[in-house]
Amino acid sequence: MSMHKSTSSSSLGPGGLDLTQAFFKPIQNAAPPSSTKRHTKISVVGVGNVGMAIAQTILTQDLADELALVDAKADKLRGEMLDLQHAAAFLPRTKIQASLDYSITSGSDLCIITAGVRQNPGETRLNLLERNLALFRNIVPPLVKYSPDCILLVVSNPVDVLTYVAWKLSGFPPNRVIGSGTNLDSSRFRFLIADHLDVNAQDVQAYIVGEHGDSSVALWSSISVGGVPVLSFLKRQQIAYEKETLENIHKEVVQSAYEVINLKGYTSWAIGYSVASLARTILRDQRRVHPVSVLAKGFYEIEGGDVFLSLPAQLGRSGVLGVTNVHLTDEEAGQLKDSAKTILEVQSQLKI
Image 1 (cartoon, helix red, strand yellow):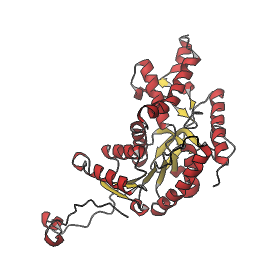
Image 2 (cartoon, rainbow, N blue to C red):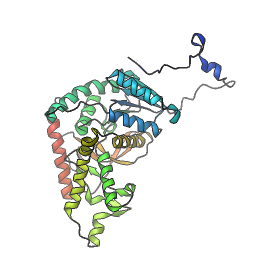
Image 3 (tube, rainbow, N blue to C red):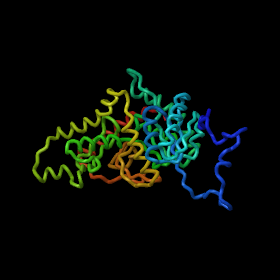
Image 4 (cartoon, helix red, strand yellow):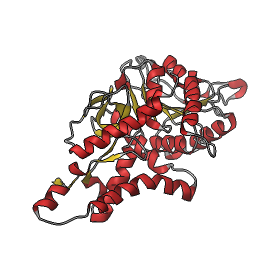
C-alpha cells in the first residue's frame, strides 16, 4: 500500500487535464534537466515520537530534497505524512512520501532506523533484544535492496547492539553503518558542564563514549572550555575539586533520559536534533567529530570480537572517515574496555 500522493495533484482541470502544462509555458529550445543535479533523499523507518521528531527537524533544517517515511501502522503513517505536508507553506520545498512498502525508500542517501519494540513489564533485556532482532530482519534487508549505496543510521535502542545487528544483516562495509550512540549523551554532558560554569554549551568540548547506557564513560581528562583543558588547568592553579562532583555530573547524564521518560513518557526533541546534526555532517560532508556507535574493534585496545560502541568519530559523505585518537587515562581506558565487555556479553547470546 502506498500513500505518497495526497489527494491534490496537478490534474485539477476538467477530465483530469494536467494544469502544469497550461500554467507554465516553457522557454524555447530548453535543454532537458541537468544530470549533475544532486538530489538528497532521507528515509526514516518508524514514525513514533522519535522518528517524527527527527523527520520534523530534518525538514526545518532543509537537509533533504525528499523525505520517505515507513511504518507498519497505515493510519498513523498517513496521518503523520499529511500533517507534515500541510506545513509546506512554512518550510523549504521537500517532497514528503510515506508507505508501508519499502520501495518508497528507493535511492536513499541516508536511511534512519528508529523502529523498535517496547519493553514489556518484567521482560529481560535479552528477550527484548531478540524481538528487536526479529523486527530488524524485516527492516534492514529491504532498505539495502532499494538503497544499496546508502548509509544506515540506527537510533533504536539498545543502540549499540542493534547497530551491530544492522551491520550483520546489511552486509555493508562498517564505515556505512553508524549508531546514534552517545551523541546525545555528550550533548547532555556539555549542557550540564556549561550550566555549572555559566558558559555556552558550544564552547564546551566534552565526550561521553562507550555504551549508550549505564556503562558509558565520561572522558574527563580531555574536557576543555574555550580551548582551556579543565582538569589540568585546575591542577596548575592548585584548585581542589571533588572527584565525586565529576561523577555526579556523569550520573546525571545517565539518569537524564530516564528522568525525561518518567516525566513526559518518552524522549523526542533532543534525539531529533542529535540525529539531524549527524545527518547534516554526513550528507553535507562536514567532516565533524561526533561520538557515535562504530565498529570499535582494534581501537583503544578493544578486543574480543566485533563490537559497536561510541567513540569520537569523524563523519562525512562516506560515513565514518576515522576515529579520533583521544588520549585516555588508564582509568578511562579500563572503563571503556568494561563497557565493550558489557555489550559483547549481550551480543554473544544473540542468534545472528
